[in-house]
Image (cartoon, rainbow, N blue to C red; front, side, top):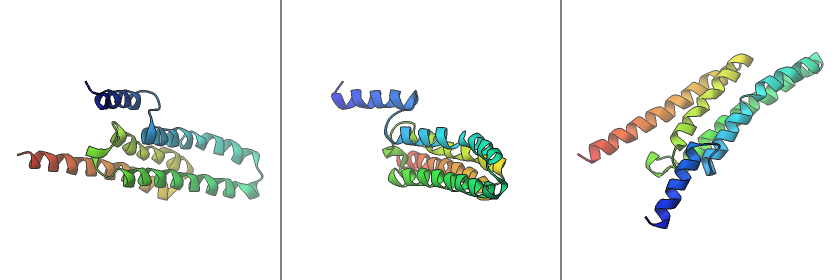
Length: 137
């Protein structure tokens, strides 16, 4: 086994467990920070005066959009499944998880964009796998 194979196996194991490395780590941290923060936003909205509640809400909504744009940026950097690090396709599809905080806040752009993003990643993966199968025939 050569050094490159050993590194790939190590990267695949790191990507599968824990936070992973590289783009997998960035996407997982984006999800782990962005999703539970909705509860912090609810707490802040309870504590601030009524005049500032809308601003707190708008800042978090901008954060959701920023998280989804980060997912799109990573996808643009690794558009083909064959050239992605291990488990990156799965991590890209997890961007659909921003549906729940968007639903809790009534943020309709997030309620549309998050599931549409997961569907987009799944369809591009299915198309690429189908193309690879047809090319090998």
